[in-house]
Amino acid sequence: MDGALTDDERRVVAAAHRLNLIRTSRWPMVAAHLLAQGVDDAPVAELAGLPSTASPWVVDQLVLAVLTVLGLPDMSAEDAGAVIAPVIGAAAAERSDADEFTVIRTLARLSPDQDFPSGIFNQAYYSAEWLDCQCHPQERDAAKALEAALRSGPPLHADPSLLAALRCGWI
Figure 1 (cartoon, rainbow, N blue to C red):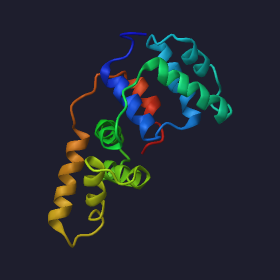
Figure 2: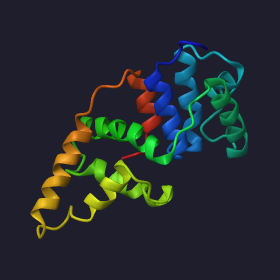
Figure 3: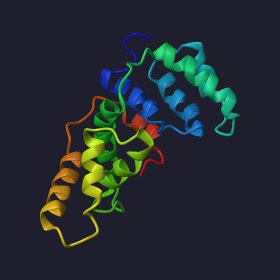
Figure 4: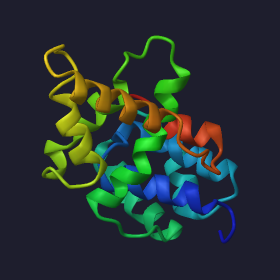
């Protein structure tokens, strides 16, 4: 398994799992992409072979085994947010139907489930307060700058198909 995933891929999978962003029905597809990238351990192959309609109990047991195989780093919600924000930003930048503040709205929506962590979640949650009003132009301009920064972050060294499998349904 060593060397099959880049550090960025490992961090994105860990962050997405930490933030509960990967739906149970998506894990078999994520596992299939991991398998295609050379993570050929038995739990990964077994999970990849399940249909998306498999019992969550079965999937969740295999997910724990896959996470163990991957040896993913532990991270706080704040750190996971910092990893996931540019992934959401890249997804929003690729979509022509994304609204002007898709990344901020998505991160702000995730914030309560993570108990309002600091960092990018805090910035997004605060910025989201001002998106739909013209009464505070400075805050709205700051939100525009934050959204632009999140959409144009540094590129990740990650397989695009793995990222697509992970972020399905995020925005």
